[in-house]
Image (cartoon, rainbow, N blue to C red):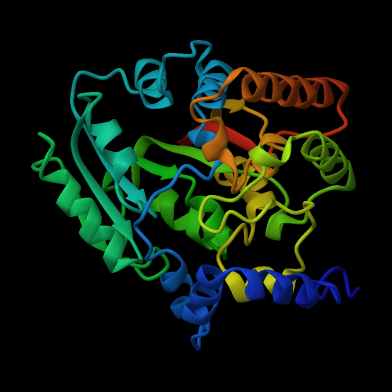
Length: 330
């Protein structure tokens, strides 16, 4: 309906979940605040962590590393440093949308950075990042600061690298943002983006949904309970655009435009795609069952990875995640 802006069935499914899940009711009530920016900040102010995402499953994380770097044990930061940041002089970097700051610590751990200026719109996440930084040796390198990427003063010719780690897909007006990013890079500077590049507003393809739900239907019930509520994972649906906007106006807002716009504003040095079109949807909310898999869970993991590989090879689905390294245009 109206290009999926409204799904008449969505309120019914939501009401059923709200009746059974008090924690969900509290989260929804906490997000009913005026203004787009306020909802984004509320959504990203929760610093608690639980293994509810596909990338937190060790076997899938090894698969991602193998697809990006060719080595299941090699982090992508070290891979990028070895291939693209080989100068003897330490680099200066800007990280936008740093969240709780874990990735900046990994970048600093490569030993190639003199400074990393890291910004996030959520004050609570920056507070958490600063607290965690105290237990690392990188306090003189990383500077965590509260800031909205769209309002930051980005001085020209300042940074050797700009880093995005699953943050770029939360920014709108990407065309103007990437233009500003290019301006703040020094000549020869690079952009590194490890990103969700799939359908904007999570408007999944029919083929994705069919494959995900066929796999999910084959999961024994004990592997489909959600961590917080113990409710069973429901059939995966394409969310309405209105529901996405109400939940988090920043989520995947222009994600399908990321790769075309990076190609427009920069000279792309390398693209490493790593799937996720099936695995991302399938394990959302139930990943905790597969962090330390028993024999049956291991079989389910291997089967789902094989299905994604086969569909990618056949061209029936595309990659929803990619690492891209690009240089400032001369």
